[in-house]
Length: 486
Image 1: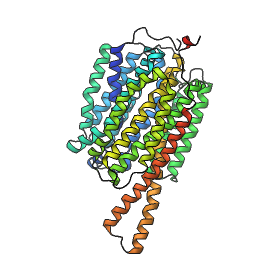
Image 2: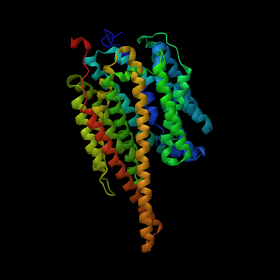
Image 3: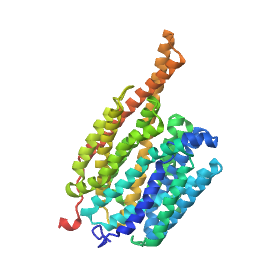
Image 4: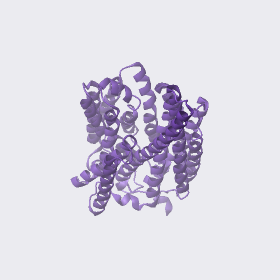
């Protein structure tokens, strides 16, 4: 089956069923972020422990995502999606009823196992359902789900935590997951081609050690510090694991993750730009709430509402961007979008103690507009350059790279913020002590000012990261349908 061989008529109803599942999975990814402090108090655990609800979910996804290519290649679409959804439903139910933290963490891990296959399955079905010239618009709609669901999560979570118990977060998701399961049993068909491939279990072990180690190392670096032995050890083990994983894939006849995808120059370039973009984007999504909540003292729900216009802009623009991609290709969209992202990220580095709400919301929303112009077109163009046989491996590699780059970007930018704010805080406190003005009230002002300067520096670094992606986008070329090249 070649790149140009696609289904004669897209299975719209089936794609709709997959969309419901993917939306629930993506929403679940960020739903707990705002709720963690409340859950920490209720469950009687410390911040490091409660973070495992987010880190553990991310780790399971990071380990299973590379393996998703094998499962999608080996097993039929219908049973794979149904089993994934059943696991997700069981995990959600377990989390909703959890009497203790350990049970809640187990439920969260089960959710991650089920969710890991939903997005890649939908992406692969859409790749074979639409020809290259219509794929941008189709994947633009996929982008709407991929962007809107995790963006809505924090706002929804903030509202629920303020007015209800945190268990409502899981109870609310449960009916949607069950509906997705029933719809998949009723209407799902086997549309993706399968073939017998063997699973190399040692590759899975290396994947778990490598990708899991890197994700975990970067995720705890903000709390433990870069010089912490556990951070250094975990990152070294992770890097060694990834190197061994890649070397093993190159030798296997049926690799878990086919490295042949990177032989396509446009796929490789798209992967690099997506990674750089994820670093700047994920870091920004952490820094902006940190400024709004910790510097300005705005409530979590109001903070979530301030981020919502940006999320809606991204969701609204994604299908439009897809259609523009079909007409003009990725390069103009990427250059324009990344230019907007670089400028607005720089404007966020100019935030101060009395920046107006309008300024914050406007800059964040325009930044989201720039991201929406780039994200799906870049990935779509890269995937278009692959043969259909490599689609599962292309989507798996994309998702893995984005996850790791996002974790690295977040960790680096948060570390820069912490280091700068700590240094500024010490200097201001020493100056106040020398002047005899070091009161408890003034210490609060010092903390806010120090954190603000840390956030400003981090946004400045994120600006340079966005500029790197902008420079790389100049080398993009549109991938045309092979039939039209002759």
